Length: 147
Image 1 (cartoon, rainbow, N blue to C red):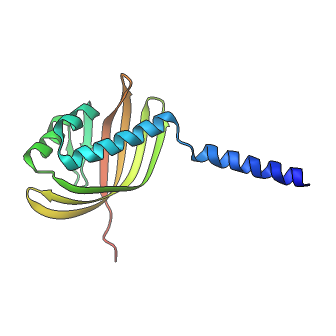
Image 2: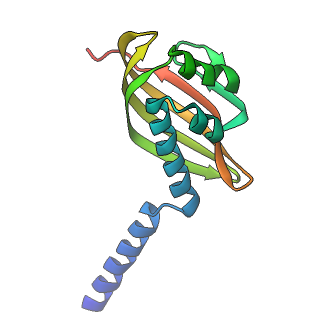
Image 3: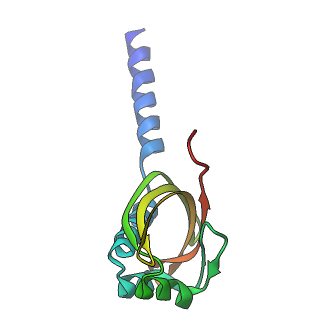
């Protein structure tokens, strides 16, 4: 009986470990999301450009959808200026050469020199291009204010 209980616990431990373990691609995508977050806060155009696909479709929470050129211009001109960005509740799902990332983004902004706060749910689609993960699409949705 003790042997059976021991085997059961070992199986549970192994199953849980396998379910919680991230694949190499999931880790790489998570690292790319973090690097992209840092580049957005730093308004680092060169890094944002390197990490985004030439076919980027970038959707803002106000409904505006931009291509890569317009997205990058927002950071150069200060129209988009993230002071802080905190990501939480992130999930990463790999599908072939694509990755679907969802997370909550809470941040402080200074868009056009006007301080503000954002609380968004974000969907990002990353594509592996020549061995590197590039942001292909992003869509943000505003969360309703807490009552």
